[in-house]
Image: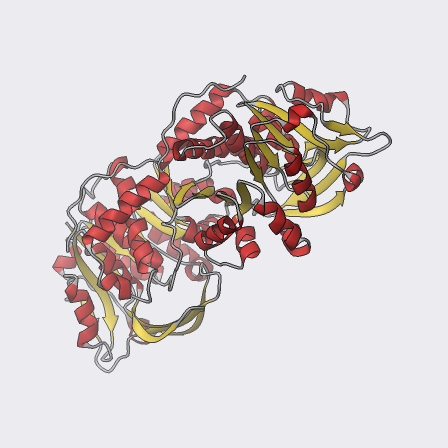
Length: 310
Length: 310
């Protein structure tokens, strides 16, 4: 029961209509790892600089995350992202990106990271994703990506997608990637390239899963207040793939996949309740269990026979 | 078990990336009536011109819809809408609107239309909606609206909303109406104005219901091909309110409301499979029942106890 994640480890500066933070722990691998840590052993692979201090490591260690494959680059600085959200919290506006140690990142997996049940290739350059995928013995490999790589590295991205079991992508990006305005058709097209599973992330509308001929969709958990949407997709992936890692990741049943979607949805909803990793750091298993149960109540209807008029 | 709908009866010209039609039967009251006719007696209230011929009446009569309150204006022409959709089928672009007989429409309800279980005030000028609402003895009154009235007749719209049991509105318009970026907060705000129920229509993402403290959401039925989205919201309303009319409309239980959402979702999905009313004209009760069952399978997950790591 182990998950390895390769992705960014970052300092983020985030401003929303409600508040702001000048420098906080972030990055896709971090958001993913905290969410997945409720289900399985988690190994994080990614580079940091000298400015990544003991207190940052502590956040991950407190959740039992293995940081042995976090590569500390002497003299380097950690990846930095500055962004803001306006009232439409679905749209992140990037104000500044400093790749720093990420510019020369060449991921190397230790044996423990290699022999995981599930591997998540968070949003990084597709050739890097492929090189990691080839080092891994995972039974289930999933990846994320973004519009940047669709625009600038489409062939590399297609090659990376061909080698994974599951693509998680925003629904607009799925359409962009395939040129298919219909989401079901876009998902089927991606499945012809290789993946047996496609998860369309839909922000505040939730997420949809395409697996074989099957379809499953869940709304996002309704929150009156979203403080910071940064990392929602990665904490969704952490809940989703963490759950799979703990439940026969090699060939997950339809039932397991659906529950995994529910846990992903729950984890994402906690992540956005506060800035950065603030909420996740004090999240408890009972809160997760309760939220999944509530989500189930919010999405269930009982069908009874009805006499329709012909 | 009867529903009255007041709204537009129209000829539509529609172009999509797939095909086009120069003149076909349309209008919110028509799309609503065809959908609701599977559940209850339907009375349509609205004006038409001399150009509204027997074949148009036939479409409604074939589904048992009462057209006695369709007011035929001698020398007048029927409301006409021309629009198109680009690849994003969620956005309708209006190219031409001819109000024609709708310009001087003063709705008058016959006793049969007045004494209905459910009244639907489709998207028309809010003062007209209020005048109809006051003529009706319905046990449950719902209304739709649009950005035009939020911009140009906000006070009248607020007054109309205050007198209904249920507001159905696109989610972007709910935000616009209330100035609340959070959908749950926007819905709660509307409920403070009067309605006990708010349905947020979310296009391809489905619909969400706020009722008391309760929340329920359903995705849209996934379709590989959407030929013409015109009327999707009204056929949703027809399925939703038709179901309520047939099941204790006066004080619907949470279970009944959820099933009504499912039937609304199913009816909307059929409506958009073909142009105008083409699909609805040959829809069968079994197809509806099957689609609701399929929708249930697509949205159900079973929660089982899981050992989370603290």
